[in-house]
Image (cartoon, rainbow, N blue to C red; front, side):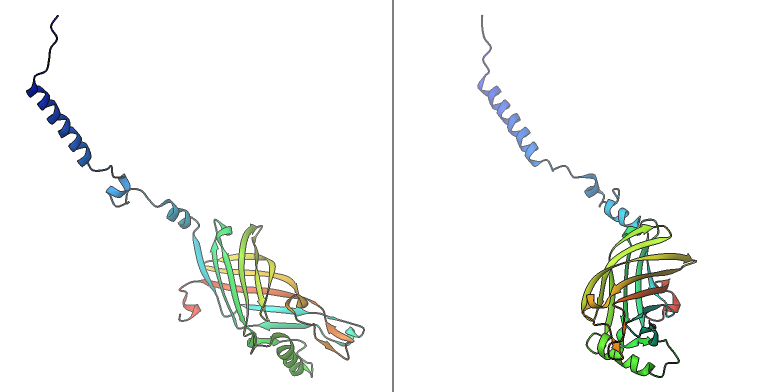
Length: 239
């Protein structure tokens, strides 16, 4: 039985065909993802959509916002002393608030130490002395010009948010927690809350009077009443 033997010209043709196929394969362009073909327009950035879904609105504190500090007296003759209401009116604050995802919110405020004033007892003859002692022995505004708070986490609670953050007072940082009740009226936002801290945690010795028989308690109460407007509101003033 005769076997078919390829002729030399046929072998040459097969070699040229194979070479052409290999060259075409090597020259073919690599597959381009669909997003790259159309500049990414057909595939939205999922991370951008996730951030946008938090609908974070930036609010700034209005001038009527303030921070109050309430101190109480203690000691053998504390009934001769006074509880004091101390107010900080020079208050700047920012809240980035997400109504749909409060955990993506943040809170920050700064108080000018030189603007802190003792309000009560208003009829006390030694009010000026109390003010002077507070500045010289407690706040030391020349050395520590601001009191600052920065949130580290925010969690939703009934009627508002629970804020954990760092309070910086006379250069010492301590973690505090404050529950803020939130009230939204039109475009404005109001945040009200309070927290307690200890003076000695910040290296402050509670002031005393009458040879130590009357002194301020170590625990002091901070009360926040912050009225906020969205960025760009004319009531915030320029810049």
